[in-house]
Image 1: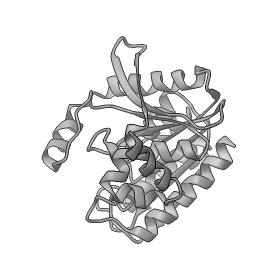
Image 2: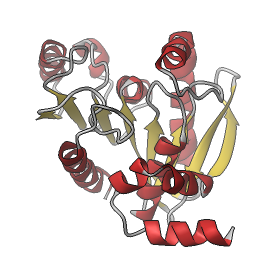
Image 3: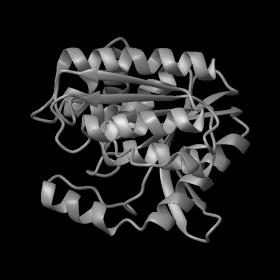
Length: 253
């Protein structure tokens, strides 16, 4: 326990990328989170990992994992957000399953039922808004699989801000009209899936819906913000994180 506290104390001054790139640091940060569970409005038992800041009540951020599942990497991002003053909740849409191989990740992602995931995320957002350690303000952030669900969650349960890292944004203006706060999108020029055609369509639909959207393009590929990915781009990951921090400060205070 002493060793983990020592590691965490040293990690507090490190940039997020350094923590994510070091399995020991990420594991230590992840172990500092509190396991939480609720029963959704639809009656399903779900779980997540909660990180609390030193001072509360505070604004909250809901984090949605990549196709790998709720691993140490995502939990350590939650820990970093808590260090920055937010109540951070990393949710689990895979019912405890975590992949380390692409085949498993693809399988787990394919098993997610849209209505259940929507129910899960909307219920967690409601939980955060009502939590006695929050001030009622909530933003969502997700990567890849979670990037698309960050948008879906904000449509199902409107929040103060939405952040999307290279996630599926194929939604129509009629759906986007439900959004409450602004949206920030991080996209990669070399991404063959979440490509310019998709994002351009999203921009047009957001404009039609009268919603605020800021998009940033990086000369990189899908998953550029993940230090464990072969497509990781250190400079773009750092820049996108700076923009995410600024967006959270502006939308949540």
